[in-house]
Length: 411
Image (cartoon, rainbow, N blue to C red; front, side):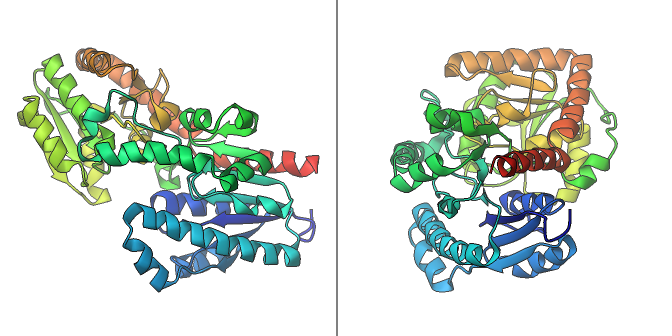
């Protein structure tokens, strides 16, 4: 196929930075993978203009930058999280107008909005009338009823979020985007259920996280053990929604000997977690190390027996995937994003039913995993295999190309 015949794809990515992390790195990753077989035109902000410019030349991507004015940023910052949404919405409408004009010039074959990773900023470019892909889309995750006790200061914000999610969902712009889009990549089944049965046939579950190439290439080595301490590890943002109180309650009930939990990270939940550790009587078993440079994490992954990831509202789990890639077994809740990352062969998923039952099952799992080192080794090996077989960019590229080909052939 000649360059002239190669399909032109318009990709919209608000968060996009080839040298960044999290959603920004993922936003760029989708564009880079699409560019291996298509002519990619990237519509994004000016936040990482220099980095995008350097990498776009390498991959043959043509970017157009739609700025977020400093005045708008400062004004919307006054309104907290709602202001952040306002800023994204204003940018989305500006970007949609640019997309209209660009499409008239270039005649794109397909449009794909990758980031925002939420349904709350609608996919306005579906109005171009060409095949369209939206996602990975998240946002339908919520705190299960009965578990609000574990999120401390976020009780009210999360309650309000649950109400506003419903209001956003019935907003005509969101409903129109869901009706017009051809394919929706959803981050997890919790969001798919939230979006409803009318669009279920369009949905493909695509966990947003991906392994970095350097992690794919590293061999999985046996964990180094120098003592008989059962070492639990948590790495990531310390958010109240990551319900560490469930782990403290399970530790108290399990009454494990020679065990410790290391928490690496910082965030709004730290004070809540310190207090809960004292209230459950396990403070002596818990070490808070704060935020560490990424280079220092390897030692903790290597010497840990188990990663705990008790997120009650999470669309994915980058730390969870990193642990899996290193052969570290995972124990998480069978809920939202983490439930897609882990299966029965690569970790332990705790059912989210009632707090009492969830804590008891969690405690039983800790006891079993402490006693059975061969089970931990088996889960860790399968975790590394699953990470490399399911969550690489090569796997995502295959899905992307197959989806694009199907839509373009249909037209």
